[in-house]
Length: 102
Image 1 (cartoon, rainbow, N blue to C red):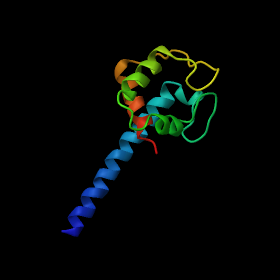
Image 2: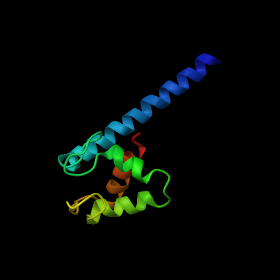
Image 3: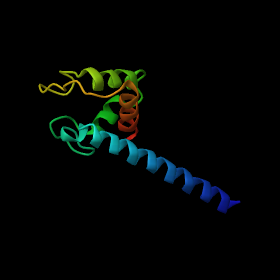
């Protein structure tokens, strides 16, 4: 029984790692990592800081997905984030990935 539980947990880990890599690949493909890094501030905030700031906030995913598409200013300092050429689906996928970072 323990072997089955361990196997299921390992499979879930592999699947979630694949999703995380795919979403990081999307961030790279869309140019997000030119201004953001996962663990430390660059031009924009670190993605882990974004995840920390918005953790547990209702509606944060929709708000951030809109910001990815339209751009924003004043949330993280004086440098504005320009609009990005992403679809709503891509934006939601990116935000889900960012908010999952711990």
